[in-house]
Image (cartoon, rainbow, N blue to C red):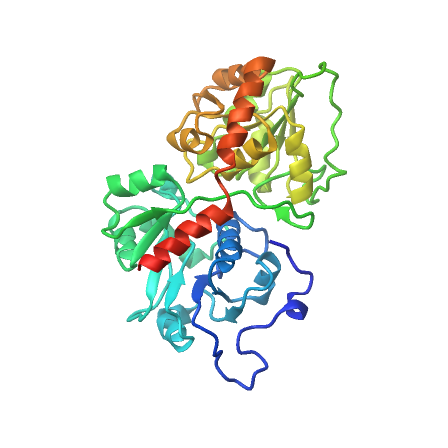
Length: 405
């Protein structure tokens, strides 16, 4: 996926500048890319873009957007249609819009899409059930949507209603698929179409990461240079990386507290962070610990820092997938993570695990990575396991599902 400084120079909307005539090409699968965030791309944005790019290599795809700025974060060469925002009242009539566009199959990277009386195949995605444990909505959503979000996650029946509107449901992991079955969330078939790491692009800012020296800056590869002590050939370096948000379930406080037991290590918090949350975490940083708040990182800088880190670390209590885990494994970087089912699945067991609520166990797990022999064997197995997660593999699974419907 290669972002474009001026996407309108590179491509045009389907049917644009053609005298208003409808596209006469074979009908394409429509992918709802309207959830692509233009402020800083989140996991849904990256999932949608990755699927679109790989799926378009297998069959014709048309993207649905509501803001031309979204094109900077979506793959080149894929036709698009500009329609209403998913937050617009016009969303109630989106089925009519899609019918007029000739949609035969619509894939949404979320479980939400409006409209009634559709005449196309609909495939929806449920990434995780995290917000049933902690229903506080993301702050970027409009206030009315946040209220609905909070109410929505206080009962199971609204989710069932949404998913059963579809012809099929997609999720990103076997762990989430089992949870969907456990809570009987849909009578539809559920297919696992996993997340996957993307290519490094220097101009892409990671919203779920952080690096750099100030709260407002986005770090480049030059900015993330670190002073590393000479630990001897083959020995681990002392940089620990956390990539992810600062939502309560991410449990970043355990990582910060554990640094009191890890002299010689430095924790890099690589995500954009709300000022009030940063103040909360700074208050609990141990006096003898090194913790760096980066607040934004370019993709190339993140990849550079990841390759020379001692470990990628996370104490999350819940995840839908855990993409940074795969990214670290691909880079040959050890993963130190909380012992939860999704991390067991995604890592294939090739990581160092600890109790999510134990700062002491976290520190012990980091120390275990210092064993050169075990470190080498685990990292090699992890890299081999991670090689199975690619957008081409995921797109093929989605394409096969579409063909069956």
